[in-house]
Length: 55
Image 1 (cartoon, one colour):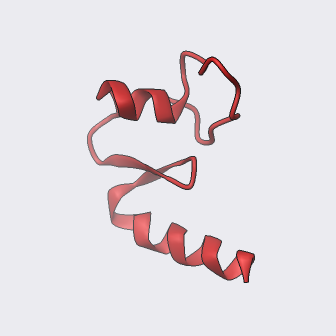
Image 2 (image 1 turned 30 degrees about the vertical axis):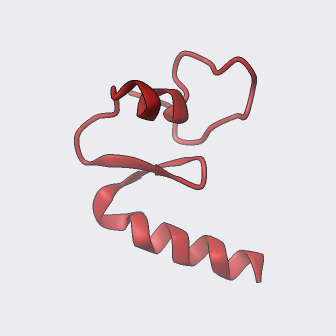
């Protein structure tokens, strides 16, 4: 299972969600939004919440 949030290190660590997304090894039902691991059914809520914080 990948970490919940990307730590932005270079080179990417072994459990990085961005690396798992690129390699196609994410668990079914998960995606990465804003460097965070989220479930597909909650992906839109994560984007809405992060856009409110930026404003």
